[in-house]
Image (cartoon, rainbow, N blue to C red; front, top):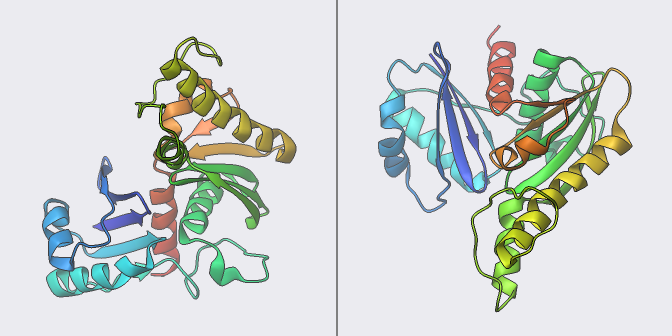
Length: 242
């Protein structure tokens, strides 16, 4: 069975490609050992024979290599230079393009077609432009949780808070004002990029753990696909095992 893993700065999400898919998410901890991560992943490892990982945390690569080699005798396929993805990278330095961006793009191109705008909301929020299966460029902005942490850390009177979408983009209390500013503001920022970049016959895909917070604001032309990176990792697995 195929196991795909997305290692992000804030969270690690795994997906067992059974029917139906089984996903799990837990916090990224750079200090955990391979043995500790094995205990965390152990309930999901029965019948796994193939592992494909996208990671933006280099320090965890040897940890997961050791885990899967030691406990399952599996060589991990890491998304990176030399791996077939189906995504062209017309950039001066393809090696610096994040594995997560490439993996999501691979899933989008396979599932929705070669022309797309992709929004991925995590620790950072990224807006990627894909044309003819080529990742032409990316905009990177601070993510919702990262922005909240930065503001709370720098202000004496503003309280920590849980995101909850208010009914309108203006608040009449401190909490509703914070939620309005962060959630509506982030959506308007994203939608501004989409309006500037979109072309005819171009799909708009939104994903990432934080996307659920603004899902109800999305226009009808947005496609919300929270597991598209795992579809992309599955596609990459197929391309590298033929």
